[in-house]
Every structure is written in C-alpha cells, then in structure tokens.
Length: 528
Ligand code: AHR
Image (tube, rainbow, N blue to C red):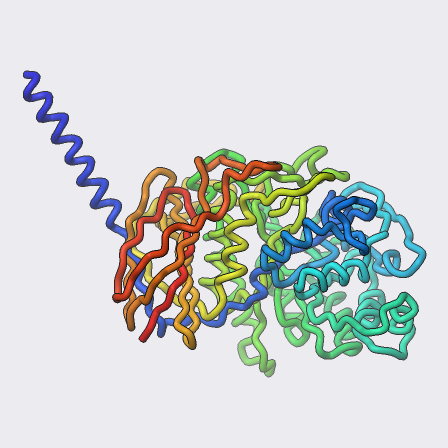
C-alpha cells in the first residue's frame, strides 16, 4: 500500500513537472526585420505637467527650498526628469487649462485666481516663462494647450504671438519687456483639453467645439504657420457618451488644420483583479484602431497631403486618488504605484510601439506627485514603480517598430470596467507575453520589450530571427519586485530596474526565461 502511494505521488510530481515544462516552453517570438510597421516617434515618450496638486508647486518648483536652483526649480526633480528620458512635456493642463488665462502668469505682476477645476487658489507665480526655463533644463520639447473652455480664440492667438513671434506685435514686444528677447518657437499646440467631458469648465458639444477650435486654429496658424495643432478627441467613455461621434465631427471639421487628434485614457484595478487589469492597454489599442479607421474615412478623397496622427496625450493608471478629498486641493491625485501598475505602463508603451504607424505622440499623465513617476516631499524624492519601465523605453526603444509574431498561452478576462465609470469590456485571447520590438536597420541594434503578465509562471520562450541572426551579447534589464503589490517609498526601492547577466548569442534563435510579473528589455543586434 505504502509502495503504491509512493509511486502515485512520484507519478504526479513527474506529470506536473512535464506539464510545467511543456507549458513553460510554449512561447515563441518570431522577429522579421523586414516586417516594419513604421518609425517609432520619440514623442511617444512624453509626459505632462499641470497646475494641479503638487505637480508644479512643491514638485518641480519650490523657490526657497534648499533643493531649488536659482530659478526655484527643484534640482533633484530636474535630475530625475533628465534620467527618465522624457521627450515632450504638455502644459499647463488638463482640466486646469479650461479656466486658465495665460496673461495672469507672465510679467512682474501675477494675478492670483481661483482654480475652479481643482478648487485651490492659483498664485500664477509659475507661468509660461518659468515652464520654458524648466523645459530647457530638462531638454524636452514643449507642448502647450490653449483654453477652449472659458478662453477666447483671440487669447489663444495672443499666446502664440507671445511665444513664437520675434518682434513687432504687442504680445511679442511684451515678452521682450518681460526679459525674454528671443521667441521660444513652440511647435506643438493643443486646441483645448477634454472638451467632450461634462466636467470640463466651458464644456461644449462636438459641433460647437469643432467650430470654435477651427477658428482658433485659423488665427494661431496665421500667426505662426509652422505650428502643429492637436485636436481634443474623446476622453469620455461613460455609458451614454458617444466618443466616436465626437471624434468623427472633430476630424471632419478640423481635418485641414490639425496634425493630431488627442485621446485620453486612465485605467484602474478597483476590483483587485490582476488579470483584468494588466490587459487594459489592449483596450487602448482597440480604441487606437477605431480612431485610425475614422481618420482614414475622413481623409478619404481629401486633398490634404499629410496624415493625421493620434496623440495619446494623457494615459496612466488612476483609480485610487479619484474621489472625495483626494480629488481636490493641494494634495490632489497623489496616487502611489505598485508593480502591477508598472506592468500596465509597459503594456501601454508596447501598444504605442505596435501602433507606431498612427500613434506619434503619447504623454504619461503626469510627471511629478500627481499620478506621477516622481514623488517628492520637502526633503527629497523617490521614483515610483512606473518610472522604471518608462525610463527603459524612453532611453532605449528608438528605431522602427517591427511586427513580431508571438505564440504562447493566452487567457480571457472577465467583463470589467477598464476605467472608473466607463462602459464594461471583455478581452479575449490576451497573451501572457506582451511584446514589442524596435530595430535600427543601419546598425542592427534591436530592442525586445516583453511583459510577462503571468502572475506565477516563468515563460521560457524561444526567440527566432526570421532573417539573419542575433548577435550578442544581449544586455538584459528587468523590472520586477517581490510581489505584484510591491510599492516604492522614500528610501525604499522594492521595484526597480535590475541589470541581469548578458545573454551570449550568435545564431538565429535563442531561449530566454521571462519571470512571472516582470518587464524585460533585451538589447542586442540582429545582423543580416
Ligand atoms: O491628469 C488629470 C486630469 O485627467 C486632467 O486634468 C484631465 O485632462 C483628465 O481628466
């Protein structure tokens, strides 16, 4: 009897080992350097600075702090932003901008105003010129949003005049009087923020917004024809909203003026369902495809010679600090991130790369303290979990996107809310391995980005070059942590990037074991 039991136990151990090995060796990533999607636009590694909570005051700007430089900018934050590799920064909002008058924030006399979006007193001591000082110190591209809520189209035009016209007209001369003789030449301008949302101050319906934005565009472009405009696309996916109607009307009306349509998306895990949550970036890809179709439809037969692209100019995980006191005031939106959130951000970035032909800008909302990768107090700062995957992408994933073939185990989600209050969705055949590949045809440098969404299992994966061969050593960077809920804090880094031993390879295939709940970036060469 004992002997039989022993055999049975041994058999089941062998069986489970067999199953595990079979399962673990199931995944395959095939990479063909000829299957180019498009150039990855570096502007997909953008972020966002809004007058909100402690993003600016107490975040990037803290005059009088021992950590601030001569311009009142926090030096520890400047350093962390530079290291992050962020390419473009949207400013000054967000909901804030729909009640913001930029003239209040320039020159020697600043006008304090009630910020009606976030319910605080806005001192306006930080404005256009302070932001441009920050921009220059971090080496990013500026991206301004004009007030299409309570603002006028003239006010939008004056702002372009103030920032971009060298001399002559009143507002160009005003900038010079303020001590800034040279124009800034700001290229990117967005025509309002989330104007489809009922929460927006000065919210309009699609038709009224499109007309107002078109007229603002005419004035702004006539002032500086080199600027590139971004239309406010859909952000409202609640039951009853019609986001694609909004996008269609806006594209129709603005197609001769804009270069991008902006989309927004925040995801969350309020039901604590890990597998639903880590699949949410796939919904972003679905929305991307829908809007790509709308763009093609609107441009069909048009004389326009340039495409219209998508700017995901607000995206992130945001669901904890989204009610009551956490939604207003000086400590608003101070979301603390964990490892599963970092995997979601890696998923978003993989998704942008897989849609590199149409997604040409993206802005992680936001940069400091407010749903942000950098978190400060008066004494210092720490890097939240989401900092690390973003940094790896922004610093390394440059080139063309390749359409990799991924074969491996999948799962279906339940029906769930992707974002708070939104309509539900159900995602099928979600691959545990989420992959994007970026390649430089000149040098052969290849960057393979892999999220292993599996919570418990390593996925041992065969990587195959369908043309040429991989040439090592491959550098390996991994973002992971002790468990999916692990967070960072001041002086505590549970989730971060760890450099793993290089992989030596000189053949058309190699095997790599992607650990559970991880993001891995492999950097080597693919030679022909
Ligand atoms: O990023 C936080 C807020 O989210 C922005 O102000 C608004 O545009 C969006 O609703």
